[in-house]
Length: 335
Length: 172
Image (cartoon, rainbow over the protein chains, first blue to last red):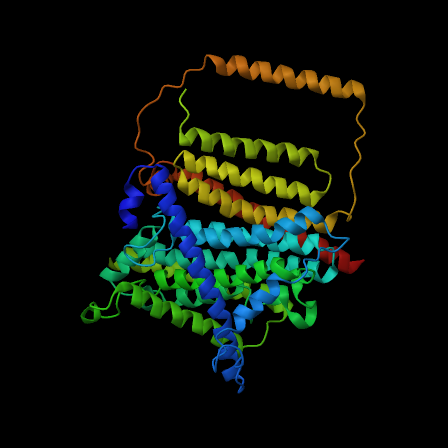
């Protein structure tokens, strides 16, 4: 359906259809974020031997996040007097926009994708790198030393971890010979999932992606007990909600990307299971990746700030480089 | 000239790029300037997309997002907060500058006005990433490798310089 639309001529009709689809996607993502937060609290709760939210909306606390969001929306909007007003206002927007933009290129199933870009993978990585502006700007504009420190850490961390992230995925690109996400999935259909062919790349990518998402054990930009809450200390109400939304939308996007690159996207694990539609497979793998993120958050303590950079540059980066070298060697020698 | 969607998109992006550049010169706080710079770079990436050079556009954003963040961090660290620049240019200098700008504009206009671009139909935009790769590793392999060696030398050099200063600092 979308495939035909993408190849048809441009016009107001198509513009309208795409606009509507984008609105639908936004609502789906918002729904995901609502329940991802609940799921995270529940998972963390059970892993720490407690129940998590269980009051509002029945036994499972199904309306807890809805109530939280309502609370945030009706909260007073505070802009500190000493803050840099225009930047303070624009920072959450700059942070959120790329988070939603990256979703355009992700193929959810064979038929459902918004933009079939030739350099899809590169587009994702490039656009997602822009969120750090919002974080650094927000930290600076708040005119608060904790916020500034958080912003600085966010900047340094995002730049350092983007390098292993990109380099680890080069192995996959070498095997596929394309940057297009559809081609990457198609290649996995022909050979095997890239998690089996490129296990090292997968581990490096997964670790770097946690750092890119600013989640524990890499949540130094917003570590509660050192920096209060990092770059968004001064934010409240819906502006703060925007920063949180950014994080969870990125979790959505990153889990989808990992599903597409390493877990075979919408493809079933075995051919005889092909009668189950691709969307179901995608959703299952996607949920599994999201669960692993929560699991890691519940399991591991936070990194020390001086270890963080060392780990990126002295451990992940050489491993990723060695992985490319090996992949290239094997590809030229045996294929 | 007919007004097409491409034309409108180009005008929008070009306007944002130029406004970003002008703001970069006119704003007084470093961080504000960097924000203006972001708008310029992103809209230039948009112009690359219009020229169907999607690979260059993605790389532009990828490289410059890191670069801008670094500029921003250094801007924050190396300048005083709330330190507004004061302009100290005289009137005579402003007039001279204005004349220079007009002269440059006229020269460019004369240069461009009769410049005829011969439009050759190409299929460069199809699979342009692959074509860039093939060209880089076959036709332009020596300049490409030379550039990478140059960058490596610069990288090693900067590390050595940084280390040296640290040692001297320790001795003192």
